[in-house]
Amino acid sequence: MSSIRVVSPGFLTTVQDLGRFGWAHFGVSASGAADPLALRAGNLLVGNAENAAALEMTLTGGEFEFERAATIALTGADFSSDLPLWTAVEVKAGQTVRCGPSRSGARCYLCVRGSIGVPKVMGSASTHLMTGVGGRALRKGDVLPIGNEAVRRPRPGSAVPPFPVAGPLRVTNGPQAAWFAGELYQTEYTISEESNRMGLRLRGAAIPSPSGHMLTEGVPLGAVQVPPDGQPIILFVEHQTTGGYPKPANVISADFWRLGQLRPRDQVRFEKLSIERALELMQEQEKWLYGI
Image (tube, rainbow, N blue to C red; front, side, top):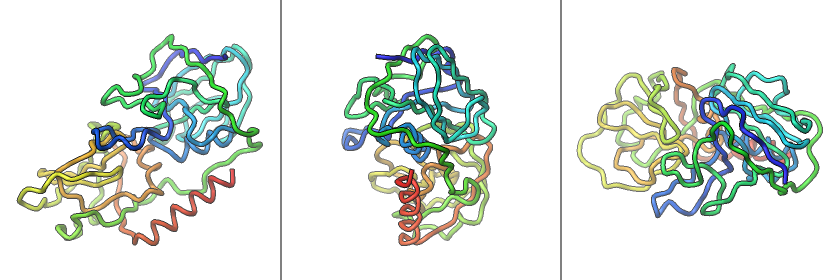
């Protein structure tokens, strides 16, 4: 079995697939790729199933040496590299793939034909940093096996997503939307440096949070919750599975990938859509993916 040696993991590199589902009642959220669109596209480019495990690099990239020749694809944020993005390419035995700092966006994915062949925990190879389920962040000297899970030939040519990165985050009404007067849509927010894979903390004009106490309830990925200080939090891939803060909105599924590309100090606004429009946008995204 061939392998990849971690020469440098950069700021934060982990193994991720699309996450582990079905464990929320035990308090374990799905985790998985912060930008699932990039992960899925990269896997399809190299001929893997879309859920195959890959490397997720955050902000500063990394360096990875390939023991044998391999087919790889870099997708996601525009990290400086000698290799093209959104294209399946061949690397030679002994070659080191280097990715520098991000020029835009937050996360880049290195997908390799056959997948990253680490053991699955609770049905997934994804790394849940907050709990340690599925392992830890990669370190210099780690050796990762390359699996044999390819399902078809690599796709020739590039496949750059046609979906805009810029613009407001699109949301639908949350379960407590009626408790708010629309303040969420009147303010531009800044992504706080306190953000992580559990939640994206926003800073801006405080939203009056309704008084009284909510019963704790289940919370989904992308929920926008408003704690007592009035500064919204977008629940991210390692979010807690229950919460007691009111939620005026939820980011639509078609924009989950955009959450994964937000960096500290980025500016965001919100735009409310109907459920019907949110479904149309998701269908457009799926149609593009399955055309790869």
